[in-house]
Length: 296
Image (cartoon, rainbow, N blue to C red; front, side, top):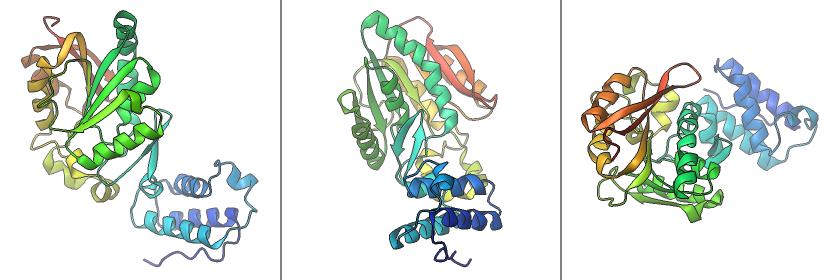
């Protein structure tokens, strides 16, 4: 592949149009959107300003940054990996090779548990949350941003992911109510929590090769590989969670397509009962809610 030449682009608008043309020529599914996001973010503009401010001149450093971003996108790097951050629930989260990009589908989990957190705060004055497999920390930090009385502990097997989550907490001004540790789900944790949340790896190992180039090349396998049947993480959480959840507590899990029955069976066998099934915007069952069968 020939590296795109943006040197002839003298203005922001010309560079943006050159990027768009390169992405269209490569048959990228989201060519126009990708060019707009990359050009606007790199130039620190709102997307509409690519038109209204499009006649502003580019300097050499800007030329190089735009050209490098174009080259990276043409070689399969996702837009938000190029930019180093992604928005989730209205907040900006820094990324690293050790973290998944937080996806819009996961916002379904946030919406599903916010009413419970607010009710718990009303009744107890606070809500203690543990987020398992945190990646960027997006789930726990989004919940804290919405509920000032809540506190969250994040747990991840990756020390690099823990470091990124803590940095995101700092940049969002949430460090006082957020902590994160390296660990294996709830193993070794003695505290009990009002809410346990997780978006664990749930893709069966044999299905990983069918994922898109952007995912395979840039998302960490630790955060994707759910074991032979995609249920390894759920088994671990189901075994550990009963001793770590408070009376009247809630457990909320993101699941993959078609996993509702199998995941539900694991948690029912561990002493939980189903408290809700929430579909994402595409109509796919995305979040399962559980509470203890005996209320303890």
